[in-house]
Length: 218
Image 1: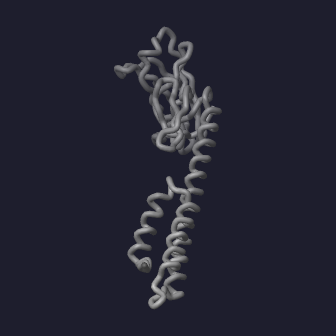
Image 2: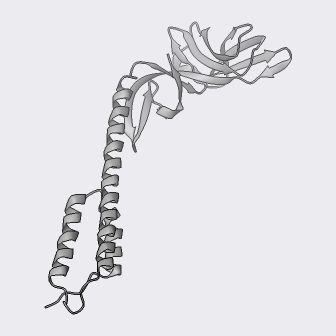
Image 3: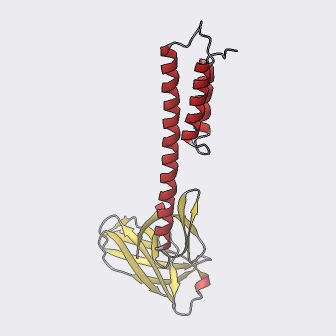
């Protein structure tokens, strides 16, 4: 009994299934399977209507393409896994350090509020105000003239319950012109984790933020 030749639609169907099974199937095993099918077809083909060389060459080229795509997918998956492992190791080394993230929540330790800000240009006067959760003023600090770039502050909060502290504001001026300051929270890193392939950092206050949101470390 003669077998029928592999049709173009059968080859295309195999090609489509190749990328779908690349993650779970061994590319070499898939190629071996195809070669067995091709050899069986050649052994059982109708001698009066054999497969022509062009068709066989085309089928061989297509299976090589599928095999190459499967191998590439496997290589990329392995690289992604290794990159994730390296990120996790790097993240562990960050535990205990202080991350600089955009925000306006100060760190309060021993009745002193700590935070930072970034000035786009030189300021003649800078004032930091620490507010309670109800919006009341808990403390202020006049920092005087400051240069452009990242700056940090300390505001004494004698007798203030740290749990009552809400946020801080920065008012900067160059002459009579306001200088827009970007507030920066100093967030001690308590834990790290991988979520959906991305490194996530957890601050001492329980907040979570992405590694890409960190402006720097102290």
